[in-house]
Image 1 (cartoon, rainbow, N blue to C red):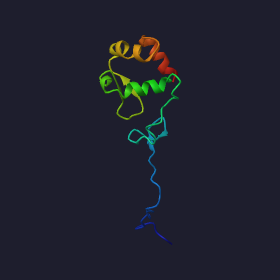
Image 2: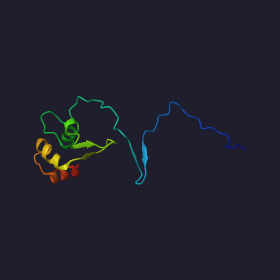
Image 3: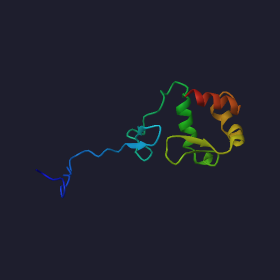
Image 4: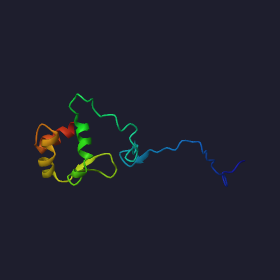
Length: 112
């Protein structure tokens, strides 16, 4: 009759660490890539001859330091937030999109 008292679980140093985080309701696993380096930073997000798609435009906007007071990544790195909507409408939309209406931008963002 073996007792579980005093038993110690063995730890395998070669066992791969699970980096997933179990979030509370709704239960799902999420991998945090916000601190991961880009494996191929020189590869363009879109082919050179094409107009950049929405995610490529957003990446270009979010990497501009001069716009960090207008739009910025959230701390977890999974989403971004427009900090100054009016300023975004004036400074960013005409430069990157075919329109300058904030409501049109929101509609387009929700489509992605």
